[in-house]
Length: 438
Ligand SMILES: NC(=O)c1ccc[n+]([C@@H]2O[C@H](COP(=O)([O-])OP(=O)(O)OC[C@H]3O[C@@H](n4cnc5c(N)ncnc54)[C@H](O)[C@@H]3O)[C@@H](O)[C@H]2O)c1
Ligand SMILES: N[C@H](CO)Cc1c[nH]c[nH+]1
Ligand SMILES: [Zn+2]
Image 1 (tube, protein in one colour):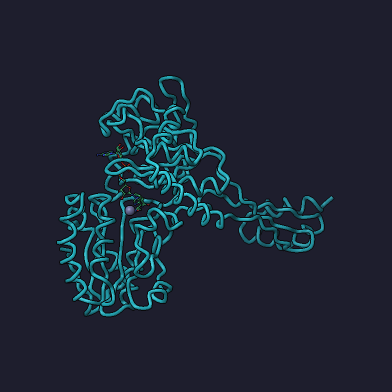
Image 2 (cartoon, protein in one colour; image 1 turned 135 degrees about the vertical axis):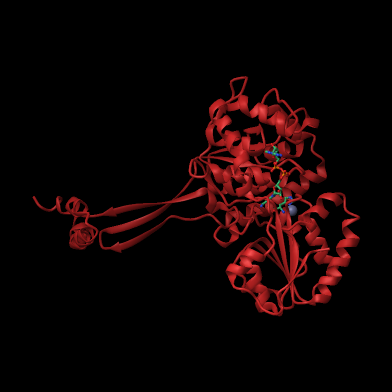
């Protein structure tokens, strides 16, 4: 079922690997031209344009885009107790992990009388996106809000697509999760128009103001991700957390049924989701194919999953040994990487590029999606080579505070002047010597 690439004869260079490894054809770059007009319309015409695009893409024309407070309270009151308890567990575990990520200010005494303090300051206002197209993601409300709150962000606004069957409000579990986490501001808007509204701000029909956010984080489909890429710099963003990817590095000790179940679990997100198996064992590859045939037919979203598994972004790569396997998964830089091999810990320790690594038979990606305590907002499309998943750090800026006494400046004046002259910027040096010339 998975298209097979046999690299057992040789492993190509990293450049060749990046070109050969499976990736979606319709990637973020390819939809930028579609989201640009949406962003410009929201910039120029605010909530009115949001309403038009919502009608076009979500099939709803909302009366109000801001969700009234009583709807948040009601959603939590009416939440299924089992789902509430699961959300509470997910929040508690995530809070534990994210509390440990808090940074403390540090002061370095560089020389007597000269200090540099690194002060960690949270972003003032952030917009958090919780997807709600093919599926709805209360878990993404948790994964966005928990680190933002742990970082000390003062102003939070959540956006999620309106749902026709809920009268143009986001799904009730999204609202309930926001209420459970103490978020008071929720807007019913999705896609690129949500990212644009968060970036530029806007006013609703009833006069409700959405103040522009300094930063927008959260996962989403290719349109959401393209909008984040387009607007970055006006706003800060986290990583590009687009259509889901799972790579599994497995040897002949892996259980084919579990490998297949995990590949399917992430293919379930989107027809553009990627499921990639990298294995040293052709026998395992055959057994996984057989399991996929068997299991895909039994799942709820068979068609979406089959499209994702047979798309060019998914496949199976045969490698000669685990050394080559590690090179392949490093070149691929998956959002999620599972290691299902003998001595999985040791293999995992050698991996450099992945959004998150799930080690051994009892750490499936689905655990991390909901209840491991780790964050599930993770870089896709190879961005794990340079970016991390969402964390407390994502919402903090490290500001250097420099304090020097007169003597400490005097002691280093000659060096500053020498470097300023070497750069042909003598006024820089004079700004120092002016203090001592009199
Ligand atoms: N990387 C991560 O951390 C992570 C985590 C969770 C989910 N995800 C991904 O998030 C995505 C969720 O996607 P989704 O679609 O279910 O919800 P979504 O909220 O991301 O997207 C739905 C919105 O897309 C817009 N849209 C739909 N079709 C459009 C079109 N043709 N042109 C322009 N805009 C359009 C609509 O306005 C709609 O509100 C999936 O791809 C999933 O894999 C990623
Ligand atoms: N696997 C997704 C991250 O790519 C997160 C998620 C949320 N719900 C289910 N899964
Ligand atoms: Zn998932």
